[in-house]
Image (tube, rainbow, N blue to C red; front, side, top):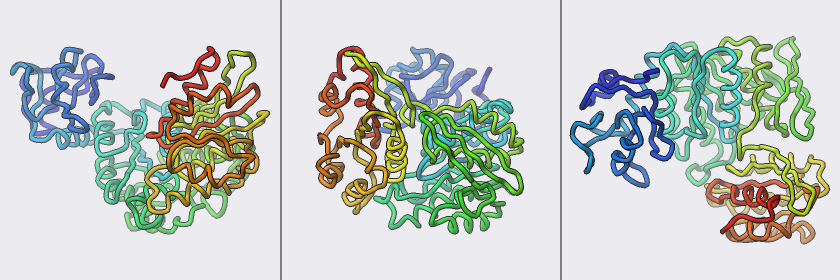
Length: 464
């Protein structure tokens, strides 16, 4: 189905179309570009104009550019604008304006991508649903997601993130959600903020984008709930809170097993049960927030619970899998390698501690963007309750050296600067019956540890 015609895109952006083209997708990366996509020549690490010719050769239906790139014929299918980023934003805003979809925006220090995926899974059972890909939640990810939204979508789930103050509000105004959900507020990105309270105010800025009569879903169990609640009320939103204590949606019981969580909750006088296909009480809390958001979007609670049962975590975000070993036997892998901060690290360690393996082994990488207290925050992980139930901790990165030094000798494993160095030692570090956690910030490449563990079943490890 056609997503954009040349005329529609030109009217949306104020640009000039060189011919009468149509596209059925939008891409910013020639590596994943599909035939018929509009290639957007953003400037990031490299100028996207350098890849326009390649994109057209791969079958792009057109390219959004601010100039005709060298080597591209003047009659190529192009949309020429003054600024490509501004053009993408305008395209996204036009896509948002032309749809009748019910939109939910999601942000939070921890759990926003998993919660976004839960929401998308639930809403797909109710109608045509459009959602952010991966963690496309920044200044180009949000407008890209919006620009990709089909005209006839019934629902849309837009993830909104930040690294610095002032980033969320403009993205929320582009998304214009009917419902905005804040999963939690935690000590993440402290490098750019003076305090966690400052982070709470930034997360609460998502409510500035709510449509009139919109709803705010906030976590009632955190220190700064009052900031979220106050900002939501200032924005004229109705507020629904979820949590274990005083809240509209109360999590009353959680029963984790090896690979899922059975939970009970209450809203008003109604008690209900739900299951989450991933271990860890934090997933149950995220799911409760997602259920609350769906109800505010008009979905019946029992239907939302049924839809939630179709969700499972994506790679790197809590996936559990059994891996064979070349010499026989197997290990259980908890792949939480996509990202890390103190809150999510403690939650992942809780899951590992509750596991049934013969030994519980953790490979932990640096947690980035924590500011002046980063070394102390890494060392403090040695004192979290779950550590008492973990047999050995292997540490990766200069910041994790602080945790390595703080661990008792019996629990202290190896330390290496990089995941590549650690991966080379994997055959001697795991054995049959182990449950193994891999977690760290994305830049620490804990995925190399995950890949190395998978290769042990074939008698090899990851090549450096």
